[in-house]
Amino acid sequence: MLTIATINVNGLRAAFRRGMDAWLEARRPDVVLLQEVRAPQETVGEFLPLPEWHVAHAESEARGRSGVAVASRLPMSAVRIGLDQGVASNTGRWVEADLELPGGGSLTVVSTYIHSGTLGTPSMDEKYMFLDLVTARLAELAAGGRQAVVAGDVNIAHRNEDLKNWKGNLKAAGCLPEERAYLDRWFDTGWVDLGRRLAGDGPGPYTWWSWRGKAFDNDAGWRIDYQIASPGLAPHALQAEVDRAPSYAERFSDHAPLVVTYDL
Image (cartoon, rainbow, N blue to C red; front, side, top):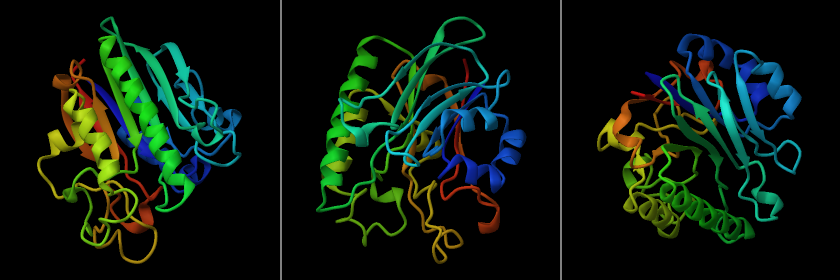
């Protein structure tokens, strides 16, 4: 069995200060895909040190922003960073690693952090441009026949079942038909949303809740963190779980880890 967790840490230093280390020790995932790392390489190495962890890390050109990483207990045979196309705001949003499986063969894992976007601003144009790059890369991975999982904070709720207050957000970034259409395209070409396939029809389970108000206590969340498997990998996924903290005070991020168990 292989367990892969994805989690937007909302700052790696802050997450460890709030107790992420205790979650790592208790859960012991084989692979952790991190978003919003917001730390330099030396800091990542301090929190996820060798020899326990092999780390591939993509920093943002903007200091203290974005940043994605793959931390694996399995060795890596290759690392590929970026879908930036020379755009600074796209940096720190995509990293791939080919992992060597114990029984032979390899698995490609991707950690991605897609722009949140704000309607009516240039940030939405940046989001759509990056989604075009992701769509093209997914096609390349599928064409190559790789067993692959693309995971992270996609910042899109695919269906109304993926957020509590869907009626109030249908014209907001993260729920727009144009954004949701990208996920439709991915899934129509064979990529599989494991969180939804393995958890049932919903609503939820959600993976993000605002720090503000009673959103967490009332489970007024969004499902915007995904593990999306290639057609060849999807049948090997057995279970998907959201590690929702027992209480608001015990959260180490405004996101919760999404953990999938694979038979590999």
